[in-house]
Amino acid sequence: QVQLVESGGGLVQAGGSLRLSCAASGRTFSTSTMGWFRQAPGKEREFVAAVSGTGGTYYAESVKGRFTSSRGNAKNTVTLQMNSLKPEDTAVYYCAASAGLVSNIYTRTSYNYWGQGTQVTVSS
Image (tube, rainbow, N blue to C red; front, side, top):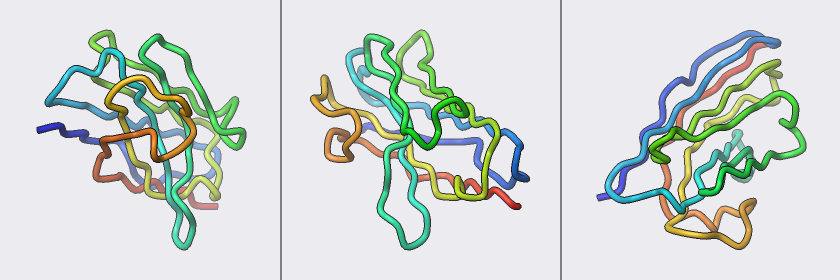
């Protein structure tokens, strides 16, 4: 059974930093893309960042220069380092993984496995 388990969310003041981690188990993720989406109240779930199986990194325009995502050597973990956080970054953050190669890293439907989500709240 595939499981993605996130950790690291919490409450932080604007300008602060948080680091999210996701550990995947139940299958091999070496060719998978692993990434992060977020969903704020009343909004659609949106792409944040992703790392492909070959190490390519992709970011939403709204987080470029502030967030950094990376994969562990075993390729079954992914982290999201979030710096210079803003109140508009407040959301539930979800880890996601694809079953294999994807054609569009930015869309939710490219990902087959999801974590339970972790709350990130940025106070002004």
